[in-house]
Structures are given as C-alpha cells and as structure tokens.
Image (cartoon, rainbow, N blue to C red; front, side, top):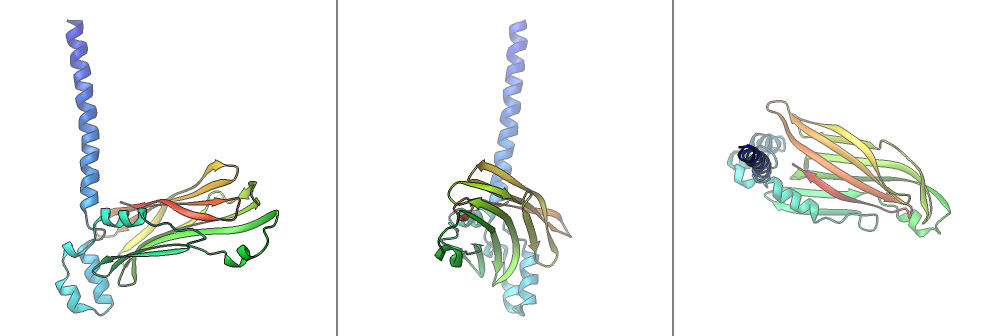
Length: 221
C-alpha cells in the first residue's frame, strides 16, 4: 500500500511539474507570436505623422512579432568599436542599438588611471518614431588593463514609450563579473494606459578596465 501511495505521489508531482513547465513554454510561444505593438498604437502613430491613408489600410499582420524583434536584437553586436547598428524589419518598423563612442580618447596613449561614462540603448521605431526604448549608463574609474577601481551602483537607467505608453524602470543593478569587468543591467515595463502592462524590456551593458563597453543579453517580451 505504501508503495502505491508513494508511486501515486511521485506521478502527481511529475504531472504537476510537466503542467507547470509546459504552461510556461506555451506562454512563451504565445508571446513570441504577438505583434510587438498593438494595431491601435500603430494607427495613432501614423496619423500623428499625417500618414492617414496608410493608417486606414494597416493591418496587424504588417506588424513584426516579438520574436522577430528579439532575433534582430540578438544579432546586433554593438560596442565602442562598432557604436551603432540598425535593422529594418519591413513596413516602416526598425530596431536600432547604440553605445556612446570614445574615439578621441582611443587616439590618446592609455593612462594608468582613467574615468569614463559608458552608455548603451536600444529603440524600436516606426518610420523613425520611437515606440519603445531603454537606456543604461554608468560612470566608472579604472586602472588600464588591470581593474575597475570604482563605479556607479546602481547605474543610471531610463525607458520611454510612444503616446499612451509609459516606460518605467523596474530594476537597475550592477553585476560584478570580475575585477576588470562589470555589467550595468536595467529592466523596464512599458504600460499602455488602456490595457495595463504589456511589454518588458531588458538590457545589459558590459564595461571593462580597457575603456571599452558593449551591449549584450538585450530583449523585449
């Protein structure tokens, strides 16, 4: 009898885990297939740009999905050596990502001790008009090639959205990779006043003791 009860308990637990993880996977797939922004916001943006004809004919299937936007973000490699990238998603939508450049200081002989401000951002746009963005920056001092002496913790961060949407930073922190590298991390919620929370942004900016920084682990969901 004890064996039967034990087996039934184990089976119940296994089914519960399967249901929980399966549910999460289904939800992730559903989010990935959603348009990155709702049709009403797109039409409002087009009308604001006096593009009323396009606004009338625009359909949900013309809007890139969350997955398409994230695929583009994941394929971007933005750093102080390559400070800006932009991907056209079609139908006027684009994703751009950038960091502040440090060309003047790079031309100088590296000094033993230096202070820099590292900044990174990404933005999702429609015909050049911003729909969502997130930005993170950190002021830090380092011994060249050796270690970061001090840094801003938490980092500075901001987020914004198109009319009707508000961007709010929900988390900002520093992840200590090692003595010569840190990650400035920011999370944001983009809230539409009519339907509540809808999108969540994430960005990580790694800055180093060589005076370089780059974006990674960037997403929106």
